[in-house]
Image 1 (cartoon, helix red, strand yellow):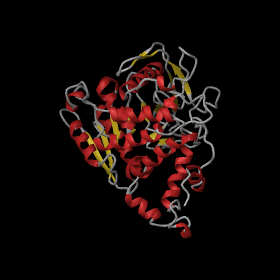
Image 2: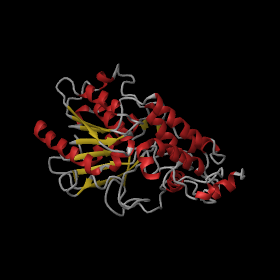
Image 3: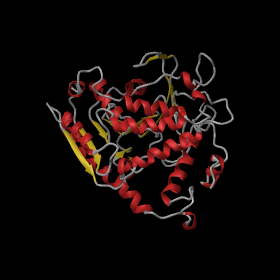
Image 4: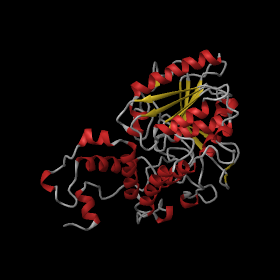
Length: 398
C-alpha cells in the first residue's frame, strides 16, 4: 500500500509543480482592472499603517449627472473585482456574478453605475501580501499586517471619493462581502441609501471560526509555507492552499447536493478498497483544489479568512443594534435554505436588528440544495429578489 505522499498525490492526479502564487502582478494582463493609489497612508484597525495602498477595481455603466445611481458590489473570500462581463479576469472570462450584474440583469448596468473593488489583503491587484513593500522593494509576505473588514470598507470609501460618489444607491454582497455591506451601514450610514447583505452574519460564529482555522492550518503546515515568505522560493504552499480550498468546498455546499451529484460512486470500482482509490466526490474536490493555486495566493487566503473570523459588527460599539443605530435606510437579507455554514437563523437575527425603528428589512429564503454557495449559483432566484428590492427603494426613498 502506497504511503509516500509524492506517490499518493500522483495517484490522485496532482501535478508535480504548482505556481508559487496565483496573485496578479504588475506586468500581467490587467484585463478590465483600473487602479487607484490612495493619496495618504491607511491606518489599520488592529494597529499599524500601510503607507502605500493600491485598489484594483472595475466599473460598468455610467454615473448619472446627479451621481445617485451607483451600486457597490462587495465580493466574497475568493472573489475579485471581476463581477461580470467578458475578457476582464485573470482566471475567468465571465465574471463571478455575470447573471446577476449586466445589461438588463437584476443589477442592470444600463441603469446603474456598478463598482466592485478587490479587497485589500487580496491578490488580484489590490495591495496584499504578494505586493511589494515600498520600504524593502520585496513582497510583504509575513510582514503584511492583518486587515479587518472595516479597513476594507475605508479603502472602498476612498475609492468612492475618487469616483465622485457621495452616496451609494445600494451596497450589495454575500458572505465576506455581506460583512463589508454591514460595515458600510455602521461606518458610513449617510453614504448608503440601501443595503443588501446576503448569506452573512452580524458576527462570525464559533463553528465558522473553527472551519476557517483548520483551512489556515493546512497552509501553515505545508513545508513550502516558510512562515509566509515563499515568494522567492522555487515552490510555494500550493498543496496546503489546495487542501484549504477542498475543506471549504465541503462546507460551502450541502450533503443533499453531494449525495444527489455523486452518491457513493467510485472513480475506479476496482480500487474501492485501496487506501487512495477515490470516490467521485474526491475527484471533484481534487479538481477544484488543484485549480485554486493558479488564481489565488496562500497568504491572502490566510489574511482574508482571518478577517472574516474577526468580523463582529458590535466590536467597540456596544452591541449590534447600537452599531446600526445611525443607519436609517431600507435593507434586504437573503438566506439559503441548505446553508449550514451561514445558517438562515443568522440572517433572521440580522433582519430583526435591521427591521426596527424607522427602517424596514425584507428577508428572503432562497430554496436551494447548493448550500452556502447558493447565493453565487441561484441567479434566477436571487436576481428577482434584488430587482424587487431596488424598485421598493426607489419608491420608499424617492
